[in-house]
Length: 155
Image (tube, rainbow, N blue to C red):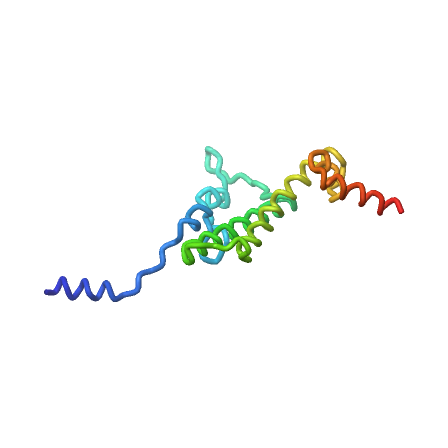
């Protein structure tokens, strides 16, 4: 009798929300900030030599390109998380949905950033025109846009 009362009491208590699979894959918490890993905890503690003296290590902050890349990837992960949660709740997502559009924008931003970085070595600048030059080699529509852009710039 006591066990059944105790079971009923436990079943009435609200269960804590377990993290979704996306949270587990991304390593993101509920507030979309990265959780600290064991590696970061070890790196933040003072480093010791074999004899116990403290080694001074200058902590370097990531450069702007790394920060920008991390922001793009975090935005992409967030959009994937949102679209997966929508797929679970609605069972179907329309292609014209704003969730799909925002996912496409996040993917495009990641791809454009990668292409611009790769083009930096070829053209010496991270411009849209340099990117258009490279895409025009394989895409006829981009070639037409490039020709019209160059005509406009020459006038």
